[in-house]
Length: 365
Image (cartoon, rainbow, N blue to C red; front, top):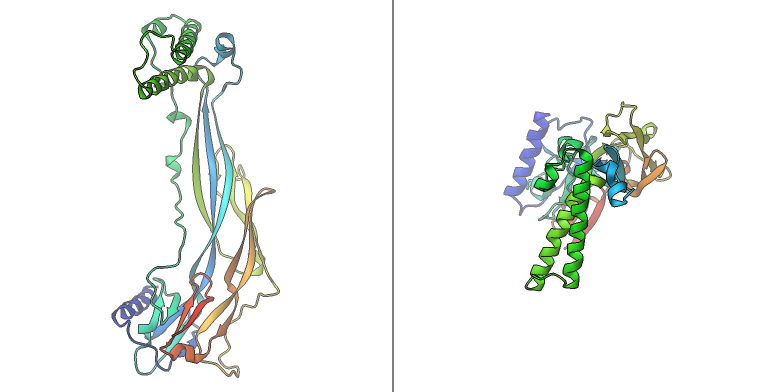
């Protein structure tokens, strides 16, 4: 592995030092090894990885200390009566990225001017372009797993922000205290009504002060009200899962397990229900094979590229379809060669898709 990375690094450094040179008499041959076996100019075609971003929501509800008196003192029945934590899956997104396919390693044999000056590779050796200098990489969405420790919990919700008055705190029982808080809620509502109607002696001097005063009263009322109806906090949590389609027997499988009580759980934890991934490969176009260099062919030296196979990907939560998307998979695609002249002609350029190995663009200057 260290040797492989060393060789690829040298290739990239040479490219940066001699960007004005072109390939001369390039012959492309496929290696039977998984890593470069000798010094030379090497590149990989990619294997397509499917990344699935699962977006879930955690809802934490905490009952207020006076919930038993909500109907008695405030005539409210829709309140939280017990603490709970509930997880649910909101949506899912599908992306693809490319990794080096060890079974598709190629060597460019050259004469004369170093060929590496015209190649552009990813950091792990996937061919991106020939004779085309790229200023930016292909757009790949930034997908970051959120740490489980950062999620909210019942311990993070409290009622410490309630500004109890002295009259409320000196009450000798919960019932009496709830009664006093309920009276304060009614007083605040009456005060808001009088301010809106202009019935108070000391009205706010301007519009801005008027809005701030009402906002402060509303904030105070909601703090007291939470003692009866409880508090609810919600948080969005994202997790990223990878799936590499490889072989016809492994295209439909359990991607993860999810629990309403625990959220994301281990794949073997049967307390969670399964979320499936289905990859429906277009078998009529599927034709994955290694180039046969011994077979008679008019073109044995052109640049090897890929014609990827389309596939429909579905992510299913038990029986509910979360999302589906059409993707292209390099590992099931057909490997073919471009005309040799495109490789050695300094007036031509080739741009490849680093996710599938497909030709994106051919430029003739």
